[in-house]
Image (cartoon, rainbow, N blue to C red; front, side):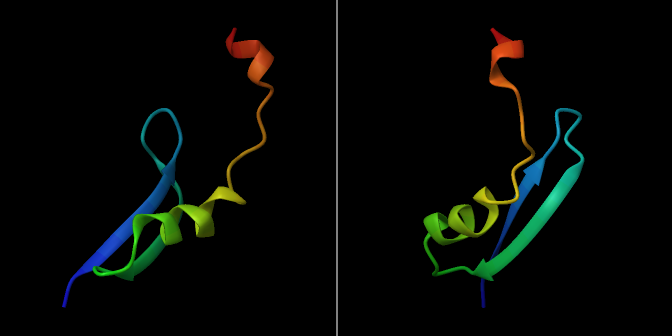
Amino acid sequence: MNTKLHAICDSPARPLNLFVTEGQVSDYIGARALVSSLPKMDWRSWL
C-alpha cells in the first residue's frame, strides 16, 4: 500500500497543515483539501 503526504509549510519549511491520501489518489485531491487552510497574506507586500 502506498500513501502520499500533502503539506502546507511556512518559509523555514515547518509544516502548518498535513493531509494523507492513498497513493493512487490524484494530487489534486490533496491540494483541494489543503487550499482552504492556506494562511491569509497581503500579496502586495511581496511586490
